[in-house]
Length: 476
Image (cartoon, rainbow, N blue to C red; front, side, top):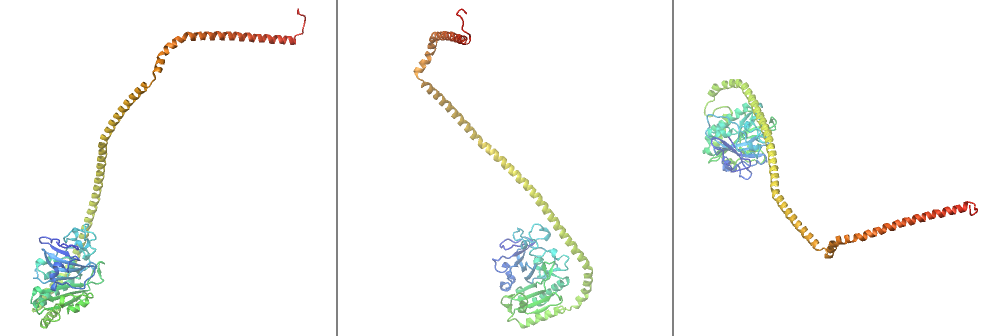
């Protein structure tokens, strides 16, 4: 698998038979260890947009090629590489880079898209995905063709950061022409083959695959032989003409790219290149463009394979389309399953965490209450002991106070109190005498009052008789 380090450097490469794509940080010069794929280790100048991401593609801890990727257009702007011995067989194993979309994700390896659904935030926001190509009528065309790399290099080329949308016929034409140009026209005319630097690029257009991935309007190749009697050459293939292959000077090619772009340091010998080698290269390119095999007649190849390829293409096309639909449905199903599992795990995990949180709160509250009780026991015991001691002191104080009060009673009062029974007994005769005198006086007073009342009635009666009865003789 490949791995990406988003704006981070110095992390170890993936082990064994895994490739690695490292996104180069702003604090590094050029493409870091992948500067070796540029003449003088100086990358092209003029690609300065904030959505241009530098990626050093690695494999088995070794840099294999460099890619400048546009997160706006979701395609590479160019891939820089060197020609190695072409492999006989190629095995497609398409991968995506998680950290281009989610820089905070801890996945450091490029993985299959289906393996990271639900674990990478904003997957596909900054890069193309396999699902973007399924059913679109476009293939994933490699800027750095795998057929120009030996077997140990091929795995690193099958990353979607090295692919652009191409029609099946244009993809086939591009890879065929580039392979022939490199192997038959460029390599034989560079005295130092390890100094043959190649830049394969694409110019984005406004046409989008599923409204997301830009379809290039032009494919281009720039070659530089940085050796004695060096030379440089540019080739352009238009999307609307798959059979076109225009050769031009690198300076002319730069004018078709962004303003201020400079592909090779010092023009790579363009000012003093060998005229003879340049003509030989252009002649070889012309033969390739006209459909001829350089140094070998193309008639035999046409006779042997043209008809078979056409028939195979007609037969295979419906099956390929069906396979693409099946793959698309399978990918969507896998995405749904992973998303559903993620929701289930999230829901179950949330419930479990809520239960654990509630249990933890209960345990904490219980322990807190027990702690408060245990802490209050010594306090209550001490308070009881203090109250007992204070009660004892109060009793002592009351006894002392009572004793003091008793001691303060006058002696005379005590004597009078002791003599009270004697005086009380001695006073009884006098009291009885006084009572008899009082009773006698009362009786005498009653008798006197009665006599006075009778006397009064007698006086009143005599007065009435005298007044109303006629006077008579004294006898009467």
